[in-house]
Length: 75
Image (tube, one colour):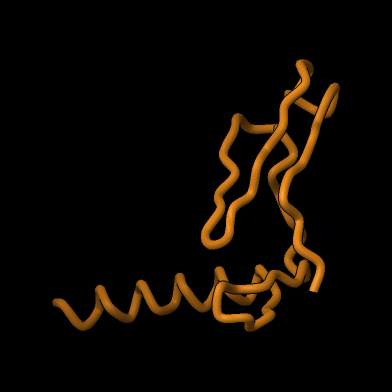
């Protein structure tokens, strides 16, 4: 499997100045202002920490459904 260890951006969206994003082993999160180029399409396949691959849209839908089910059980 290919592993990305860093990403260099200059002049992309809101990264006018040179920026280097370093990725570690484990959980990584990229945050930034709206329009910074952080979004994915529904069918983008992501790899989870356990090695499972899933479409990001399906993952989000499953987690939202799980969250609603937990709240329903607490009432």
